[in-house]
Length: 267
Image (cartoon, rainbow, N blue to C red; front, side):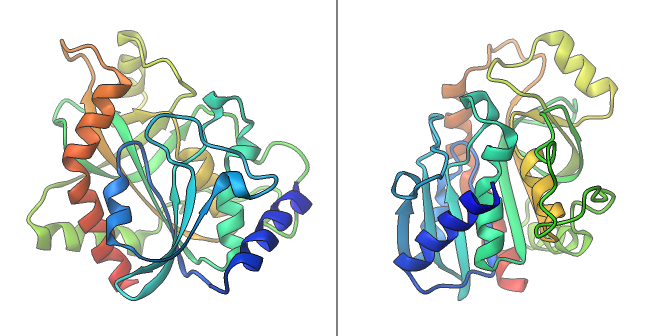
């Protein structure tokens, strides 16, 4: 795995001379963040030998290198999920690649189902902690070059970045919810009993991604911030679908984009 990741890094470095400081992962339907980038280079995943390819609708499958508020960034325009048939060690390869390219900060976005009864479709939720039910990406031999065998997760979400997000959300005049994100494997959406289970164990929102990426980012010493767009709510009389998730994400993604841009400018 180490050589596979280093080979991807080498291929990218052969295509451009660029050292990003900040990595951004775009969730389902949250492509408008891409519009904030002064693009220097676009590299499709398909051009990189050994790179897993995103197949989920709403995930284009590109690395975007450029600048947001004059800060050098790399965006994952399309993440890879375990429900696509990859191991979590593979789905998190892009995070390790971005870390080896030089990023120190990682901002993640996702579309999630809200189980907190106070949440509404279109809300943004700052993730303060998570409960992970997706196989841990660190299972298997540890790569000491990346991090310790038993990394602590008590501070997986950087407190200073969370404060910045809250300050910028207040300046924007939007309500930024806070809560615990629970990850399940998908690709089926949750049953009513599963939504209830997520709520009982302390979850505020549920989705099918993000936590393996956060685990790997913490393993490599990156500072992490993550925000969920509440694209649907539990126990709604409207049956959830991926098409509806994408539609709601696109409606509200400008808020996410503006928040990320403002936080990036202050890092």
